[in-house]
Length: 225
Image (cartoon, helix red, strand yellow):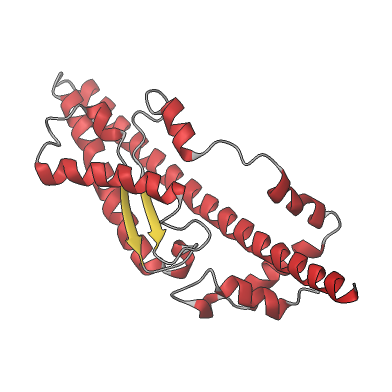
C-alpha cells in the first residue's frame, strides 16, 4: 500500500534544490485524487497509450509554418531524472540552443534571416530537478524574465519598424495596439507554460506513485509464490 509518507519521498526525488517544498498540501494533492474510483485505470494509460510524436517530429513538421515565429526558451533542471539532459529530448533542445548561442557569439545574428533565427531555441540549465519552476523558482524566474525582456524588445523593434512606414496618428495607434497585443500574447504564453509545468509535475508524480505501487505489489506476489 502506498502511504502519504512514501509518496512524499517519491516527490522529494523530483525536488533537488528545495525538497522541503514537498509539504503535506502538495502530497495530499496527489494522494487523494489517486484514491478516487477509476483513477488507477486512468493513470495506467500513461504506460499503455501511444505517447504521441516526439519534439523532434513536431518541430520537423511545423518549424516552417506554425512554429516559424514562435520564440522558445527552456529552463531545465540539471538533476532532472524524469527528462534528463542526456536523454533524446534534452539533447535535441541542447543542439538548438547551442545554434542560437553561436549566432550571437559570432555576430552573425543580424546577417541571418529572421525566420532562421526564430527557429532556434534559447536554454538555461539551472540547479534543480524535474520541476524547476517550483523547486528553484528564483533562478527559474530570473531566466524567464531575461528571456521575456529580449522577446519584448524584439516586438517593440518590429512595431517601430512598421511605424516608420507612416507618421500619421493612425499608424502610431496601430503600432501601439500591436505592441499591446504582443504583450498580451506573451502573458498568455507565460500563463500556459506555468499551467503545463504544473500538469507535468502532477503527471510525473503520478507515474512515480503507481510505479512504486506496482513494485510493491510485484514483491508481494513474489513473496507469496
